[in-house]
Structure formats: structure tokens, C-alpha cells
Length: 618
Image (cartoon, rainbow, N blue to C red):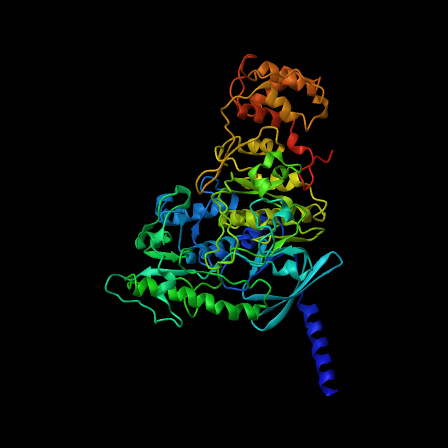
């Protein structure tokens, strides 16, 4: 009885202190990883008061705190915050060549430098506050607001927010709120993916405890103590490798294996799948305490591989870097999770939308908010029971991620980011890469900001408003590699591309797939009329467009078919307003770029509302 009374008093005192010290913000982001920090920067730039709760002392997640500092993908699409981050690296190290130290990735850096940039970046944002060493305890949605309690350095604190972003590594917040999600491989029937196994299972991709090695100089033996359970035969094929996209036979080259993750300043990122430190375990549904205990084996596996590199391969001078992670064991704060819970969202991004985006019944490409070009790459080296997903057979072009994949089904005030967005298991093999996750985070921040600024919930927002905010931040919404964000007509090309009037051309290409806009190519009269027809019903019975190359004369005719009052003088003014030079004669053959810019100026089809499925609202 006394114990119960004492507990009640403590509870009341705790509630009283929470009310007194309760913080308020417009946007709360749980997780300061790649997507969380990106979302925070974007939202704060849009004037939204933003708070980030992060468990570790670092920012950047898989890029930094997990040590995956070799960037795969989007080298020719430096979209938004990813492009800004890369430019910081170029300036620090001395240009693109100085960070092109590996043989797969184009951008490699020291994790501590990445964290330094993110820390400085967030401190520069006047609307942003980052709270480190913070673990959330409870989350409730009351009166259109989130009430979140968290512990920091032994103290229980509380915060109220209008909008919440789940940027955790494994989708823990979304799951705690009861939203539906998937774990593991999907069946073929679930999303109509013929490359998926017949039956669904709970097998996730291998995770990795990355290790950063440092060259201490020949003759300086940095060999670690022999780890428990060490078996060199496990790593026998570590030096046998080949680029799968080349179909070459494997070569035995241990230095090349190390050079995969060669970083500036004599360091090496050890994140190696073939008989290396990839490790299979599914810890997604475990408690934080259970995860921590289970991950000890993943750490031990990585240390065994390091010992193998030092002892068996003879690289005794390569030791665990002593100037990277301020942890007791000098290993990263977190493992590299390649896969998370995948939320059931308003728009599910699946393989058909990657393979043939312009041929789907629901044109999700129109709703794009982040882009990626890395191939579908699944890591299942440690689990022999995993059905094989041969990414060489699944040859895909570059792609864009739909906005609806960030909104849990029915959600009004919760956004998902990181690797917990609504994608299939197969597509996650591409969307999990660092630049894509940074883009997803930036889009999550823009989405939250648009909803807050317009006093709307997530089901009411205008897709085009979010996309335009991203374009103004030099982010790509269409994956066109031949029109950079620095181009004078970048936004016009992106907007017209997102309407589907002029479509891109996808090319599966090695490790960096492509989609081309071909701005200098011409098009036919029919191509333009067909592109306009879905958006403008007045053209449904218009059949005067032939296969002839489009001229200015026909363009004028088509514009006047859409708007009888449009004059050549208006078209000329639109041409000159967009700084395209001297207005051409009527027989001039128009390029795709010229058509896109004129359509953007004269018709503004991007303003036509679409829903989260990409369908026209009006």
C-alpha cells in the first residue's frame, strides 16, 4: 500500500515537471541520420521551427555514424542537399579527384569530416535545434498535435509538435503508432513483381558493422587481439571479386578489395560483402536492449575480418582508426542497416514503376520528390536460405521516388523517411543508397513544411507545392542527367517532365543507370499532341498532328487549338521572357528544350493538380 502511494506521488510529480518544462515546436524529427538531418535543414530553411532527437552524438546516420562514407549513386545528379554536401567535401579535400579514391564510388570521405559538416550545417539554421543523446519513450497524438516524451542524460523531458517525421533507422516510430508495414521479401503476388519469390518471407538484407582502418606505416604492427571464434576459412574468398556488370571472371587482388573503400588521408572503409564483414541477422522487431545484445556478434564478425586482413593477408600496418569514432571500441556508433520496416503508404513504389514509369495505370512518376540511379543491389551473402534476387537480370533505368511513399496509409500528421518509406523489398535494394535517402529526407522536410505553412494535413497537401519547393532548393524531381540544376531552364524541364507531356528515355547502364531528356533533339507534331492530350481534354478529338518534325508554325496552331485567343505575339513574348534568343521563323524546327520552356511559360501545365497516385484532380 505504501509502495503504491509512493509510486502515485512520483508519477504526479513527474507529470507536473513535464507540464512545466514542456517544449513546443512545429516539426519534430526523431532520428538525426541521413534523412533526418536532411529533412531538418530543408524544413528550417522554409521557416519551420524544427527539433531533432538523435540518440548518438553524431549526425548523418549511415553516412557518418555507421561509417558508410563511400557514396554510391547519383554522381551525375547532385540533387539538393546531396549536391550541397558533396560540394562541402570537394572544398575540404580539394576537388572531385581528391575524393574519388576508391574504384566503385565517386565520392569517399572520412566519417568524422561528414559529421563535422552536418553539425556545422545544423547550427547555422536559426529555426533548428538538435538534441543529442535523446531516446524517445512515448508518443501520443492528441488534439492534432504530437506529445513525445524522451530521456536525455537521465532526465525525462517532453515536447509537443504539429508534425512528426520518423527518421529512425528501422521505422520504430511508425510501428509504435500501429501503421501497417512489411518486413523481408515480398511475394510475387503482393506487388506483381515477377522477380520476387513465390512466397513472402522475413529475410532482410545483411547488415554490416563497418570498420575504418588507418595506415600507420609499414613496420608499425597494429594487429588486434585474435577475436573469439576466429575462423580464417570464412574469409577465404574475400580477395576474389569482379564487377558483376562486366561479366568478367573474378580476380584475386587483396589490395583492390581494400581499395574499394579507400578514403582520403590513408584510411580504408571496410564494408565488404564477399566473404567479408556483411552479417545476417534480423533485429528489426527486437527491443533496443535485445538489438544491442545481438549486435555484439555482428561487431565480433567484423573484428574477425579485420584480424584476417592483418594476420592472414599481411596488412599489419592497417589498424583501426584512432581518430574517427569516439567510442570505446573505436567502431561506429551504429551498424549499417540496408533494410528496415517498409511502411504501407498512400503510394507504394514497386518494380513496375521503376522499369516502365510512363506505362503504369497510376503515373507515380508525376509525383516524384527524390531521384536515384544505382542499380538494384541486394546483400544476402551470409544467408544461404535467402531466395536469390539477381540484380543483373533486373536491369532498370534511373527513377524518381513518389511523394505518396512518404505518407503512411491514412496518416494526417506522421511522415516516414530513411529506409522505411513505402517501397517493395526489391526496390529497396536501390532506394536505400545514401543520396536517395538524403533526397527522401529533404522531401520529408519540404512536405512537413508545406503542410504546416498551409494549415493542412498530409491528405490535403498539393503535390506540386512540395515539388516546387524542392526545385527551388536545386533538388531533382525527375532523374534527367543531361540537364543539371545549374542550367538556366532546369526547373522548366523538370516541371514539364513531371507532367508527362515530354517523357524521358531510360537506359540501364552498369552501376549508374540513366534517364535522358535529350534537350537538343526535335520531336514530331504527333509526339507533342499526344503528350498534351491527357492534360487537355479539348484535344481528345484533334487529329491534325502528323509525324512531321514539329515546327514553330504547328506549335502556334496547337496552342491556338488550346486557347483560341492566344496570339503569335504572346508566344513571341514568352520566348523572349525565358531568354531563348531571337524569336525564330515559323519554319524553325523546335527542340525538346524549347518546347518544354514554352509550354512551361504559356500553359503552366505543372499547375494542374494531381493526387498522390499521379492522377489529375481536375
